[in-house]
Length: 368
Ligand code: MRU
Image (cartoon, rainbow, N blue to C red; front, side, top):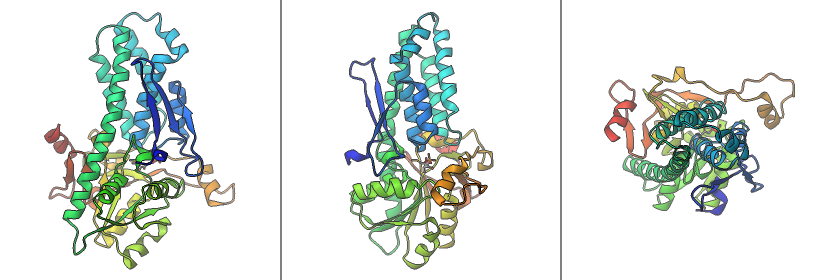
């Protein structure tokens, strides 16, 4: 994979002195600048300002940022010094996690990762060093798992699309937002499916929606498509999708997810619901591609998902509207399960039951 698509640089040569830098995605594709993350405040800030974004990457940067903070931040080391019991150290780490949880609300990966890390430190040895070592080693495990899960998602999705392809040998795919290497530790989810199809020489063309208002499609996915030399990569404005389906034809739509509820309702970048509706109207399969870390069986359905609203300026600045114009700027929407053909995970594709919903908990139980 191209070097330009590295969302983060992490190292921990001595085993106890991790370092982390993240690619400033607000400057991509015109500039490649890495920001050093020395503490949880810096991790929180790059997540909140969307210098890094994408559900899996948000979770990974929070976990690695926490590791760096606990192992090397002088202020943290001084605060840890007087803590003597394991519970005191755990409470201290949990406070930092609670702070990281406030960075962005919709992507569940961050919350699942904090819960998973909490479980790991509770099971750690008794000393302060044991707890900190466990945070570091578990965060590193999550980093590696993200990459291998994404590769499996890509291959599972490519296979399912090809198995259901009618009268063609190659796939014309459409996608929204950025779900590639830059939104994850590497490879990507929905864009990972395109990567896998491309590797099999089964990708005929890939259309990416610009993804207003923050343009993750035009700034990031378009960049990844060009870097990876995917065939017939084409950028369209969001509102061109229905016309594209009607006039040129699309074989499959694949989008990522920020949260998949127990019944399969899925929150993803604003515009995803519109893409799913257009796909339904044209009889085109619409897939969600997401790792288990994006599944949220605690929420029964999509009405319960907190949808983040971003500042008006992020829309005004990119739309050239009058600066005082009131705006509504939700970062995500919810696609009801009814419009989703299948949910591609690292363990296989989740399919709907006869009632038109997905049994996400049943699938997890079967594959865990
Ligand atoms: O607001 P963003 O850019 O963080 O939103 C990202 C998306 O909606 C992605 O499609 C989703 O997180 C899946 S990333 C593999």
